[in-house]
Length: 390
Image 1: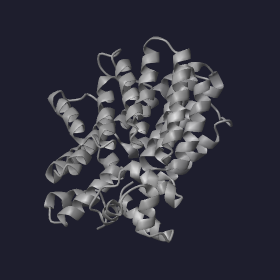
Image 2: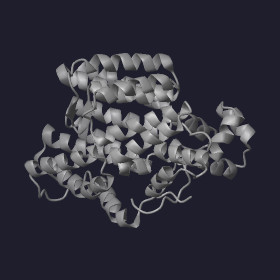
Image 3: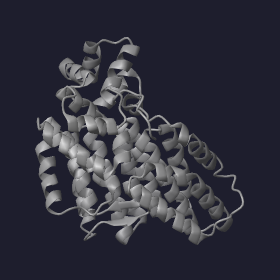
C-alpha cells in the first residue's frame, strides 16, 4: 500500500468509463439526472464527485459504485497477505489444529482493533490472516458464543479493511462469513454483522438495498436485545441508515434515522467501544456532519464542526480522519479553498494511510490541484505525499 497511485481520481474515472461506453456527456447527464455543466466540471476536476452522484452515474453506465470510485491497487509487498487472508476465509468450514488459546486470540484481536482505530491499514492487513485462522480453528475446537464472537469481530475488521480499499469481492466474502459466525455468537454480533452487510450495499451504491437491510436488522434487534446492547446495536444501525438515506438525499429518512440514533446515544454519557466499533454522542456527531454534507447542508456541517473544535473528540483516527475530510468537502463547496486545504491536511495528519486510499481525499486533492493550477506549494507537498502522479 505504498508507491504511486496508478488509477485516476474518481471524477476522472467518470470520463474514462463514459468514453469506454461510447456515451456523450449530454446523454449521461440526462440519464443520471444531473446537469451537463456539473458532469463536465466533475470530469475536468473543477467539482468534486460525491458518492451519491457517482452511484447515479454508475447505474447509467452499468458499473458498480466501487468501479467508478476506483479500487486501490494491491501492492506487491501485500500480495502474500491478501492470498493468506483469502485462504483463511475459504477454510471457514475446514478448520485446522487449534494452536492458540482464548486469551492469546483475545490479545491479538485487541491489538488488531487498536490498529484499526489508528487507521493503520498495513498493520491490520499483516495481522489478519494469522488471527483469522487462529480464531476460526479455536472456535471450531471449543465452541461457545464467546469464541464465535471473536471470529465475527475478526471478520468485521476484514470487511472494514476491504471496504476502505474498495476490494468489494473480499468485503462480500467477509460479511457472509461474519454472519455465519455471528449466528453462533449472539444477537449483538448478528446486529453488527447486519450493519456491515448494509455497508457493502453502501459501497456498491445500492442504497435502497442497504436501507432494507438496516430496517430488517432494526426489527430483529428490537425483538432480541435489551439494555445497553439494544441501544448500542440500534444506534449503529440507525447511523448506517442515516448515511444511506443521505446518499439518496432523502431528508425525511435522514431525519428519522438521525433522531433515533441520537435517542440511542442518550444512553451513553460518552462513547463506548464494543466489538471494535464505537458508538455514543461523539460518533453520532461525526455521522451527522458527513450526512449534512451529503445532503448539501454545508453550513450545518460546519456548525457541527465548530462544536467539535470546542470540545475535542476522543474518537480514534479512523473516525477523526473522515470527519476532517467531510469538513473539507463542505468548505470547498462553499468556496473556501484555503479552509478546505486546512481540513484535508488535518485528515492526513490524523489518518494518513486512510486518507491516501479514501475517495473523498482523492477527489479533494484532484479538485484543489485543478483549481490552484498546481501553484500552491502546501497542496503540492500533500499531493506528493499521497503518491498521486500528476
